Image 1 (tube, rainbow, N blue to C red):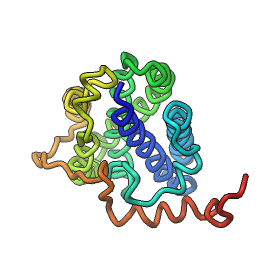
Image 2: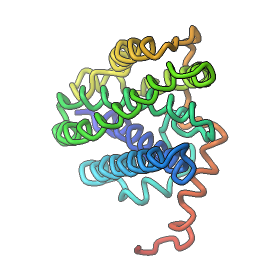
Image 3: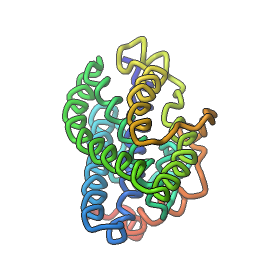
Length: 250
């Protein structure tokens, strides 16, 4: 197994989960209904937990810093999250569409990773996939409900889908070790993941009365440390406490 390839894969997965989890948590207390406050808060907790488990594997198997240091003490350019997950929004339609795109991608990713030659990651994938299954069910329910409800809800969901889709394609930005991952059997590759993702989301979008945008130009850069202006303020907020006492044990 190429260790650098495995590290790059796991870092982008962990960073996606951490940043996405924090963005989801921002809806606690302001969701449109109490049920959604609870749902987004619960999913957020799961995502941060997934990030922690991946960071833990990086520490144990590759000698990287502990999860707290990996999660909170790196430079902005060292994070490998996609731009989709770092975007700040108060548009609930956009939050739902991002949830739909992201969790379908993650469900398929972890499904494929169950066959990974990296046994520790394969075992983790089996556990995490079971949790993400419920995230996907939640996203599908609301996309179908709001896509086909009223003229206004349909319009807002379609606008959010059009805006988010190019960012969602950035989830599948190939890393520098893509071929090594494929050749070693660690992961089947981002191209295969994207193809399966599109096959899975298309019928759900059509059932919702929505349409995929014709804009298929992916917004990339996050995997190589080139981020939107929304990430730096989030990282500053996330690390405020731990950075107030550098080196302290909590």
